[in-house]
Image 1 (cartoon, rainbow, N blue to C red):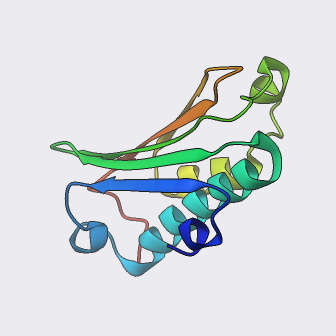
Image 2 (cartoon, rainbow, N blue to C red; image 1 turned 180 degrees about the vertical axis):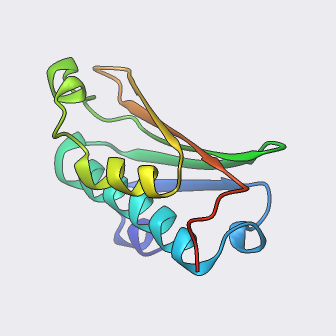
Length: 122
C-alpha cells in the first residue's frame, strides 16, 4: 500500500487466503523479508512500473510469485553464488526452493516453493 501510494510503481497482490493460519510468526517474518528484499531490489535497480505478487496454496506448499516488468537481471548475476544471499538463506531456513526466471528486457520472476509442514517457526 505504501509503495502504491508513492505513485512510482504499481503493486498488485493476489492471495488465495491469508498465510497466517499456515505459518508461525518466525516463518511469516522470513516470507515478509523475502518479499521486502525483492521489492527493494526492484525499486533500486529494475526501473519497473509494475510489480505482481501472487500467493497460491497447493496441498503441501505455498507457491509465491514475485514479478516485475523492469529491465530484468543478467544471467551472470543470477548464476553468481553470492547473488540474493539473504533471500537464499531465508528460503533455506524455510526448507523451500527458489527459482529465478529472467524475462530480460521485460522483467524478472522469482518463484518460491515453501512447504507447509516444516519445523522452522516458533
